[in-house]
Length: 414
Image (cartoon, rainbow, N blue to C red):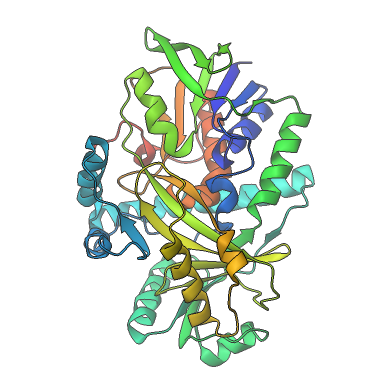
């Protein structure tokens, strides 16, 4: 048995704790928050094998440059003179190629499907009651051009063995009879599931506390002492801790913490927004508003509208124009739904850790023998959470991993 400290109490940290404890290890979680906010709580709740294309795809940088001067755009990259940002931008641009995408597709599909199975297993094994439904995901399109793009994506997904079909406007009405939808057609990924993130996080924290996992919320890692390529102690703002192994799952803050041991992780915080709507919307099936790049999820007791990717450093500033962009998109696609001023004023955000190639960092760096890194999942953290936790557990327990980790290696070059 090893004593393991996990830095970060989001979905990746909790999943890692879950599987490490199953292997018989003693686990402690440190988090600088109160464990009730952040990207793991404000995401769209998708478990999406459908999302097989990494963020760094051909044409994305071109769009980013085009949208750079529009702070309400779906992808907003705020230009700034910062060395880490410039290095990340250069590496991101380098990764935006077809060869990378082709190599990434089967890997993303594998970890996403594995994670979906693990979510189901956790609910069944531990008797979790939080929302988990497999109703699929609609990609709603308002233009012929976008529909053509989504149909191409559907064909690619089908070649990968995913369950997806094309549907017209009439078929869409049959699927969603209780809400008016302004779309000419859609693709329908039957393979996808969805959840209410806050419910699952609360259940998982309660479960982990019940089995003896120690939590130190509201504690910030201030320093890490390393000797002979091994972490010997972790200093927080409240105490000094020692462990046999350390897991770095601190999301967008991981690159800041990794510098304390001389490891440079290229990461940028990608801010996403969410608006919760408690009106009866009639929406039954999760959807992505394809042109607007906004997400729609029917959760327990409310409907969540989420979206945008804002690369603008670590901050939690709420830009009203970005909230309005999501709100406007909702009404364009669902004409009878109009978000209230109160709902928009209560919008919040979360910071997603974005690697330059859109692939997470999972594994050990040559810089440190007893550190396992698990971060950089971008918009797929919720989808890949349990699978990442299982992989972390297998690495630390010296077991054969459930899948190859080459494309996730923290030391990979860009």
